Length: 368
Image (tube, rainbow, N blue to C red; front, side):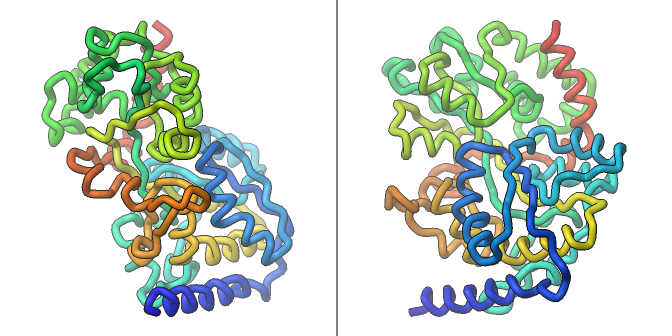
């Protein structure tokens, strides 16, 4: 009965949200930028399809989130913003906000309260890491491995990435420094609490790259999160990093012979930013969509399709079973106690400050 009451109250808020900006003329199409694959599919099911059904709007999906900072910089310089809403990781949201490429948000004005009246800003809490950031999920970057290629002792430690003797074969790692350099230092003996202090120094960066040198010839570098599950499914790599939801999809939905390594998973936030420079009509549409798509029930609904934890506190108790498989989803979340015994919380403020420099250094290292 309590759950039913909560759902009814949330539905009432959602319906109110649909009309929240109805007095303004709104654009009839909206381009939403995200990450593609299983993640975009989860947004489609939880947000885009029901919103389009309610409003008749056409939503165009773009899968360029991995290049969001560079592309928004170029659009701003050209004076031609073609995106309406962009899904980014926390550190990139801070960078875009600091550069004036994303607008600041009044979370309590733009977003629905929880069903019990708790304000949006209180409900989202610490996940609001920037005045421009509208949180959606808690996710992690972690490692999957082929269960039939690791012998009798499947990996339990993140440093298996660097152990090519016990686990010979190719690895798949992201073509960016984030996660790779933290794991490299951790597996080179640096204490977890000291990682970012060390990584802020040229010597620490060199140490991380020296450790990565030890497996450089064994790595296939990926740019999109969907690549590692495919490489694992094809047997081209013995293990590889990607986002935990992509691995869940391969394991639970596709029945692939893949295991997931939760040790030292890199926890992070992901959410929306609204590009600066939208017309009044486009901005009104974006605000209307956001009010609808970020309420308590909608964020819980996304967890029906992918194993990412909703960023609202009020959404967590509403996470139920998978939309088609019928399996409980809570135990597949990166924040589940059984999965989070040794987490590594990404320092998004560090990455907001150092990302451009470390990206350049990483690409130069790859080219050598």
